[in-house]
Image (cartoon, rainbow, N blue to C red):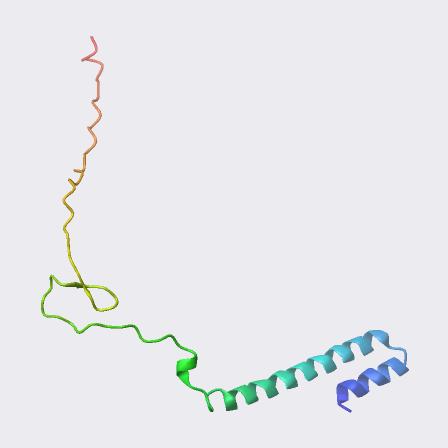
Length: 108
């Protein structure tokens, strides 16, 4: 029996319920912590044993060989795509007009 469980039993026998509650919490914390530590050790030992990384990763994408031509566009399967430039007229940026200040001399 661990020291926390023994303290819990002794405190209950002596009628110290508040102390028994704290001893119970301590015993429970120790039990959970030791269980987590054992699980960590088990997972660390078995994490890469007998597993294939391809089971956990996506397939490699199809990559086309680089071409010295810079005007060639390829899709993800390595097929050439025809480039058609945008012939739509592009809007011109317009600057807002500066506000006109009126002085008292001009208003008469």
